[in-house]
Every structure is written in structure tokens, then in C-alpha cells.
Length: 285
Image (cartoon, rainbow, N blue to C red; front, top):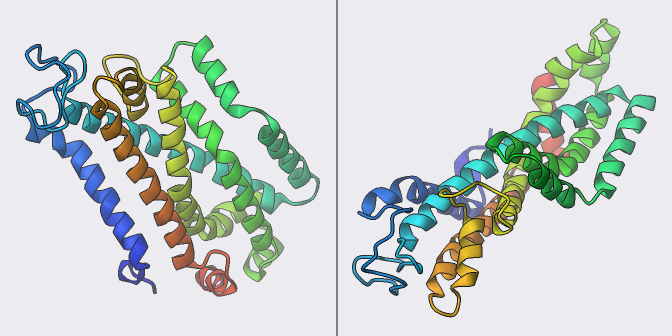
């Protein structure tokens, strides 16, 4: 059985980087005396390191260090929760389509094609513009945007499992579609789904940051990385550090998640026959 120590070195470094970033975003504000939303009127647009402001301040004296970490905490939380929403939708939809087969599968695939053809990000922006923004609507909007590719992968794997001997034996024994789905297909799809969770999570964080940049994410005084980027662009000429620090944290987080997802995919050999056979052995037994 594979262990965490057998992860590729790059994946281990990315995992350590993400753990450090998460710990810094949650615990870092405790290391400073400044609140993320409280201005220091004696320190307006001061550069990093002046008057105890490690990352400097913005135009109204708010500490960039505290705001960057608080924004990271919010962006990571929204990205993770939206990815879980996408995982639930994509896993359930894709597994059902792949296991059902026949006309039902073809119809469900056509629905995926229709969703893929839609300018879904514009639909998300329209929803957040027309309706009162709330955390629930934001999570559904972002999760609804990133679930489609996951559903396609799950459908393909479920279609392969549909012809596996242990699934055919359960069908011959009288197991219903829902029983085969719960007992045999979903347990075999979960490892692959969690690998792809690490790949859609940076996409969810990026979408939330884009929405925050447009002013369609959380409301003031809360601020995500996207909101901080929008504020930093306005102060780029006078206080460039207000843009550079949040942008740097965002880029490092997205890159670490991307490389971690690639490393996990290679580690589990989700596209290889060896990894598939190994995942099927416990269910077949």
C-alpha cells in the first residue's frame, strides 16, 4: 500500500508549502498587533518594514500583512467549500451517468455538452449581480462552474467499472442501480475524485479571486485576495506593495495546488492500468 512518503518530491514540497500557507493565513494575524480592517492614521501608504508594518500599509493605513493573510483565509475557505460542492455534484452526476449506460447516459452527456458550451462564468456574474450576494450563492456559483470536467472524468471511470466482474455479479444478484452505485462504483471512484479535488481547488480559488476583483465576492469589510488585487491596482503607482504581496501569495498558492494535483495523479497512476487494477482488487474481493 502506498504511503505519503512515496509521494514524488515535488508533490511533497507543494504539500508542505500549502500547509505552511494555510497555517500562516490562520495563525499569522496573531503575530501582529494590527487588525486587517483598522486603519493606522499615522502610517498612510508606508512601505514594508516601517512603523512595524511588515508588508506596509495602504492609502488609509490598513496593514497589508494582516489584510493579505485574512484575505487568504477567506479565499482558501471559499475555494475549498466550493470545490466540495463541485465534488458532490460532479461525482454523483458522472457516476450515475456512467453506471446507467444506454439512453440515460447519452442524455446526461448531452446535458454536460450544453453546460460546457455555455459562457458559464458570465452566467455566474449575472447571478451574483441580479441576486443578493450570500456565501451560499457564491459557493453554488463557483462550484457550479468547476464541476463539469470532474463529472466527465467520473462518467468515463464509472462506464469502465460498469463492465467490471464484481459490478456485473451484483447486477445479476438483483442489486438496483442505486445499490450498485453506493456499494461498488462510488467507493472505487472516491480516490480518483479526491485527486481531482486537488486539481479543481485552484480553479475555484482563481474564479473566486476573479469575482472578488470584479467586486462580486464577499462584501466589505471582508476582503479576499481578489478584492485586495482590485484595491492594489488602484494604488499601484503610489504603493505597489499593496498589489505585490496579495498577488504573490495567490500565485504561489495556485502553483502549489497545480503541481500537487499533477503529483497526486502520477502517484496514484489514475490513468494507468496498474493503478486501475489495484483499485479494483478490494472491491472485487
